[in-house]
Amino acid sequence: MGKRKILLRISVFTLIIALCLEMYPNDSAQLQDERQSAVHAVEATAIAEANALSSAKNAIAALEPAAPRHVSGNGSAKPDKVGQPAGDTAPSLPQQPAKHDEAAHKKEAKRIALTFDDGPDKTYTPLILDVLKKREIKATFFVVGTQVAKYGDVMKRISAEGHAIGNHTWDHADLTKRTAEQIAQEISRTDEAIRKALGTGTKLFRPPYGAANDKVKAALADADQQLIQWTVDTRDWAGTAPTEIVEKVKKQAKPGGIILMHCFGGKNGKLDNTIEALPLVIDYLKEEGYTFVTVPELTADKKPA
Ligand code: NI
Image (tube, rainbow, N blue to C red; front, top):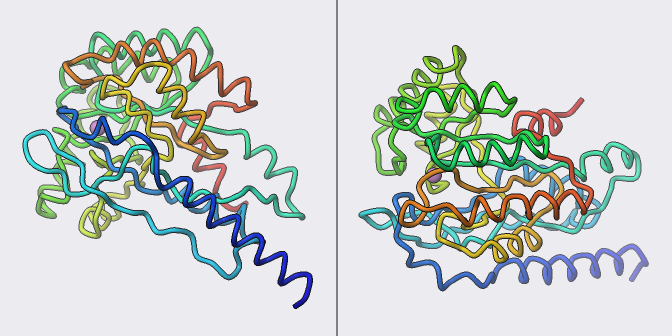
């Protein structure tokens, strides 16, 4: 057997071990938490897939990345059909810089995006904005139409302070349970509310619970919306302790990653742990050499030159 073949086998073996370790996070205890938005599904983002693929392509020529897996969660009133344990992230493969593109890879390797879902509101969103402002970090807010209609002033502040906006449906619907027409309305009505508040809409869309089937994806394509999932689930909405939120980030953060947090809709209406954890998360990632970018910046970075 050639040297090359042996190396390939070692790489494949390492990959399998790495994937197995990723599969079994220790957060099952919180799966029963009740919440308006319940368990958000973790699905690999197209971005993360592309990143993982390109960075590991030398090692995995013979393998395909793990397909996003789906595990049941629980919805607000009814069972949530699509979901995954929180720590269960996008296919993650060892980083192997392409020989010819090391400089570009190095630059990209240190980028990460913070995202905040379900707002805006008048309590937690401003507190999050305060933290981001103090640390000079730009993030992305996936907003719910009903909240946008109520808190246009907070929307204006989010935008004025340089953060990006994404659409998160009108009423936090599980779109996989809606008709194509209803899905289109969830998208357009929210976009109209965003336009009314800011004068401009958005091309970014994150489905509640991460629930996106072919019907949803088709509707997004029709509406010229880009599907954005996440790669790090902090489960901040569930009352997760600040130290545990930081631990989840430490375990799951990867170059090109997208971190899911919330600015409204926590368990019992509380997101105090998010507010407490956020500076710790930011400090940790900064120490690790990450720079913070918005989702549009991250996706622009991924586009081939
Ligand atoms: Ni949500």
